[in-house]
Amino acid sequence: ERYIRSWIKKQLLIDLASSTIDFDEAELSRKILDYRYALMVHEYKQYHINEKLMTEVTEEEIQEYYHSNQDNFELKQNIIRGIFIKLPKEAPKINTVGKLIRSKKPNDREELASYCFQFATYYTLEDTVWMNFNELIQSTPLASIPNQEQYLKNNKYVETNDQNFEYFLLINEYKIADQISPLEFVSDNIEEIIVNKRKIALANQLETDIYAEAQKNNDFEIYREN
Image 1 (cartoon, helix red, strand yellow):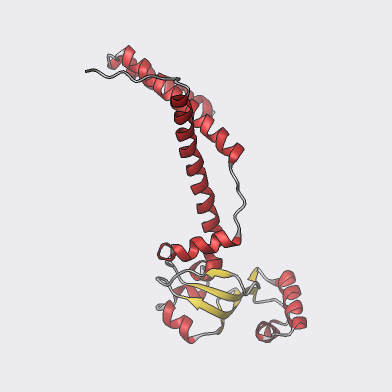
Image 2 (cartoon, rainbow, N blue to C red):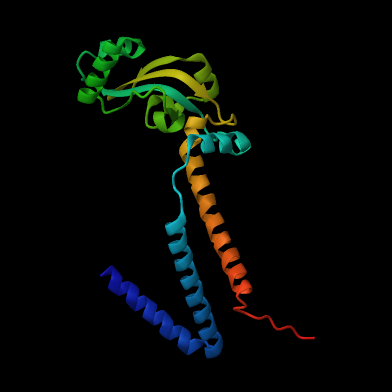
């Protein structure tokens, strides 16, 4: 139904355009040809890039790009490393969660992971991974914090609740907006940037090589008026 309506609308617009505007058919044909050639060139460049592109990016390349372009990686939001757990209020033995979160013992961490798997509505226990603080506390009582920077400075462990849930937050480390992002937080982004730069370089090199080869073989001639 949607496809049919779309097709009908397009045909009606074409009919209205052709009856309203006196198109220059030669100019229209030229534009169509230009568009066709542009599509062909684009398709070939994509084919060439896919054939030649190296997508593997080393840690050394990521680090070099990061250190050379740190001004481009200024944080736009507050981020933290820590543990966050959201539990229904009826979850069993909920009073033991705070102790398990703050414990460094491997056995306690395993017990916490098992508990969260069974009862938590949402949880993240990867305390070495940087997380967007706003996204983490969204739809929790912490979302109404008036001054996040001050809050992060003064709180390492927080328990809070609303009508239906209990929330547990352990902050191991934080960084404030406008500081430079940690490398780990932007590593994936840098990898994507490096690969995209390679794509652009391959496309530019293709044009340069084709021109140089054709010039060498006298495949074209430029005529200039005196």
